[in-house]
Length: 206
Image 1 (cartoon, rainbow, N blue to C red):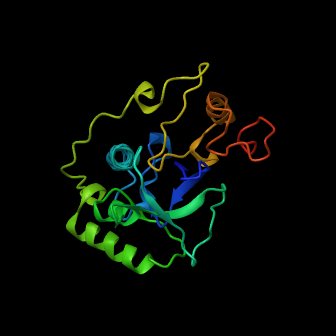
Image 2 (cartoon, one colour):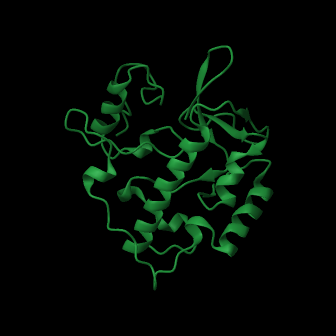
């Protein structure tokens, strides 16, 4: 997720304390979400809610003026160099809203609002809100998306995973170096910071 400050500078953000389901079906991990089984129905369910979370974030944040806040009890930047923040929209904490509305789970890390976020997640789970509303015995998930539906338009024949719900790729979102390189070549300014050493090669660990 990229933000532009009033002075024209830009930075890449990651939301503190929350984690939405993956929007690449092969990377969906039900074990991260308590009560969601590691089954076809469970993975399809999380994939669907990952897509919903992405759309919700786009609807709420794209083009909006927001307030961001770092946390003195958390790291300032994540492992991929992204600024770790809370986002406030009209005075409301958007990170917490993702938990309250069942779009995300609590991300296991240290931050000052953790207790409040734990309560928000627990309430959503108890009330079976959003992604927590799952019953495999009665679930009739939509058919598993085809490869075309699961990816963005190919770049030079490479299937690129959809943009995550937080609006920012990191190297863990790609299964191959070719996918990461295709994203970098689409925008050589590298807003996702895939080319850490600026040598023109993305995600060299892949």
